[in-house]
Length: 368
Image (cartoon, rainbow, N blue to C red; front, side, top):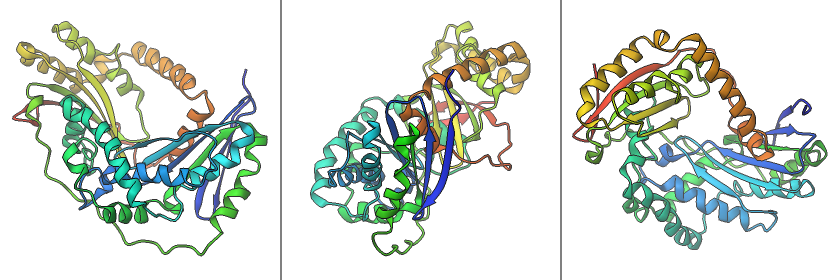
């Protein structure tokens, strides 16, 4: 049996640092989560935050202290950077992740070099419109703006982004008070990290807080290539996964079974996370079975308790716990989980909203 996990949380020079002690670990995982994502592109072209992610990885590497590569991802409301290191290199890795915040500078040559990489990643969505379906349905279902921020990016946008627009976004978002740094590993490897970070963060005068960056509400996306797709969405608080709805949306649940009974296999599933809300999306391409499958899905969503009995809920809950234990076993996974964790919000007690959608003329239309 592994020893219990201890998490120590403290503020270091305005940066929230979480240290996850794993006595059994033989490596250290690190994750820097920055509250700046694609929805914060604002009036700049889509992909500005994605380009900011790339140039800040390059800026962190410029210090030459990092022991290994950094893996980065830009989501709707946040960007996170992950790395692993040997225990003896934990402090250097932490400093390297901290250098991603750095002095909020943007090297213009590095920006031009990264455009091709961002274009290559975005090309997947241009070639496969289904990859944008999550954002399309999430924006229709949720109350929180920006759900489609990642999905609305195209290759054409990338070349419209200027150096100054990326620099402005970095200055606004890539700051210590706007970030969380989590490290997970053996206790002796983490012991010196807070002091090393404090020395780095207090090396100069504190930067003035930038002006607010209001969210920009864009017109809804229209994706004619997705016409005919049927979807079910569950809109819920981001940190809340109700066991009943987890069972309802599972591969063993009545929604997937309804499609199979109609001869229609599940086309795909995804979850779109925003700052406070998340939307789970399941979709099908029913063709001639559209009306029959729509009726079945609406019936299940109208009475999820009846269609998801206690045995299914218990089975799926047990499987989810096993999967979570497996997925968060490594130090990197522990660090990622700690960096993205949020305190429970008593006001976010809503069980979630279920809805059925059909894409007509490229726009999701509520069914029923």
